[in-house]
Length: 229
Image 1 (cartoon, rainbow, N blue to C red):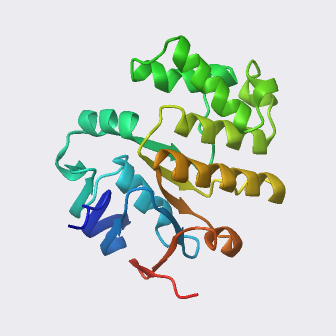
Image 2: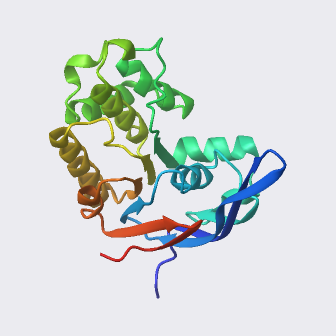
């Protein structure tokens, strides 16, 4: 018997209003992600890739369609229920870091753990371990404003993974990294997929990075299809 998909999207629609006109950014998208699968999402700028990630995370709500993650239908949850589900089950790497400037690097990681009521000695060791693996051990007491763009992005990646989510949504996670560091981050993601069974959906403009994923989806004309290599 085939296992149920980790992520199931059916007939997803999202409109945005431009003056008096309504424009469909997402128009009838359906897709499935298997548990422990690394999927890259490609498409031109403005095609709706970030909007799709926001819908999958529950940050935004679709106008129509269903999103089911690990058997739970997000589209039937209240805003608070979606927030709690996201905190516990989803990691999100934003394109522009979204680090809290008044917190140190370590505290930026401990905050989501505290929100999940997991701020203990083991949680601190877990945060330190993730930061070390991403080459940030010397930065734990630094504040975001003294970090380079690449360092801030790696902190954001560490924060997205520290609570051990089952699903990682990553919006251009290597966009602010040099080639070598970007490759290291990709290798880190792949280890998480292999060792922790993490499911990853990663938006990228890099054909080279997309080629390292298990599968590539293309978003064109508000629709998702399997990319043809």
